[in-house]
Length: 620
View 1 (cartoon, rainbow, N blue to C red):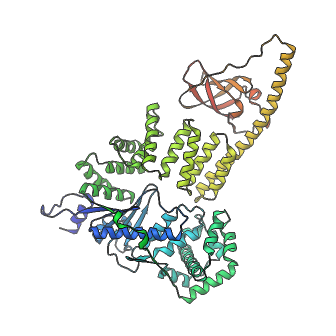
View 2: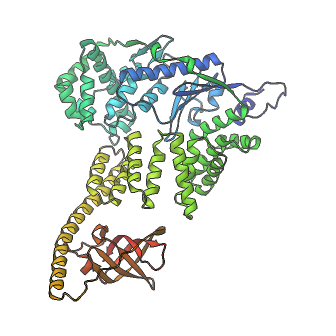
């Protein structure tokens, strides 16, 4: 068989075309407590790889006993026998002549994590990139960790070697040593202050010295803390977790930074680098590993999914079409079809594929999650909204560690203005599971604003400011923080106005009752309001404003129709202004008449009862 035909066979998972007698390749799955290994080698190799990764996890558990190191989704390891199998799956950029020859790669996505490994890869540390990215994955929940420490630890652990009984940690990196000896070190205050927006992180040459120096400092501290029985790194981490900035924490934990810089430079010049060895057998019980053979269709669907996440779209589509031709109800292939459609911006098509997977009673939380995510903005009646909520609750039940499902369900409940307390708890759970996700913190703040708690929203957004990694995120958080602060100020103003107004109203009512005992003082009648349908928006002019503390009734003249609106407590209605600064003593009962405004409202199930006001945006 030609090399080209063999490559096509690997991509399409079809029968060999040159000879009907050729055997199809056997694949098997080894499932350990925290990893899934899929290999076309043998069971012994599969077990060994699962064992090695469990040992690597044990290393981190021992190094960071208080850190929650397990990701929300299993790490799937594709371990292939030879270079041809590897080339059928690796990124296209590495297929070009003269490209770097990889022994493995780590593919991290928001909803899953893949490792691709070539068994028997050459080099002193053929899986350095795998261990580097795995370190980042396990430390991703340490939102307090500055960039130099994160990269320094990843560089420190990337040259790990694991045998049957021992692990060698912190072995020297020849490339880093070369960079350090050919380039001037960054001043330590500069190194400590580098963030995701820094040119030292993004520019190639500066980035290389940043990585190398981060490794050298971490190596120096790890080795000398162990030798001196000191706990400088631990102290540094505690200070960072207490929101001390990276430079101040370094001075308090490491002492004088100029002295530390001199010691680091001497350490690099000296060139004598030790490393750790540790026993790893105690944490791994391979009797708990589960092994099963995989069908050609199962394997093809898994490899197609990897190709899809690896952005080899054409290869993934071809393989998926073949899988669905042989097995139209293959849930994994349907989900991957949905993923590809979503990535290409074809949301209706994505929703169709995920919907089919859900209808087949998928036990994959991703199918339920993505079906709901694609359906949220599609409109629909109450039955559609119920399906969305049910799918998200199913995703949470199937994987209680998957943060996006908690976040999405919180948004759904908040948008419908129902179960706001549950929405808040779900959103907070998403943050607990993924503390570095800025969007989750933004959503919590939004829910708190809807619950009329801007002070708590401000606290959440201030924490989010420290986690923003891009200029866009920084600006987005700053805008939200400004709106929350403005709302808090307005809320304080209206609260004070309400206190004054209630005092005046009570005085007026008491005076009227005393002077005219035969006159009944009427109030707006109580309304048993039951919401119907989604939130609506209308722009027009406010008319017929009537107040009876604390209720308010008004009419919005919009597009030739009159919309009757009501609020049980006008002090709780969020007011804002667009294009002008309202008077500081604005009173909703006296100052809304004839005002242009945009009103958010919910209609009543009873047509005779006015719609409920949600928010009012005054316009110039």
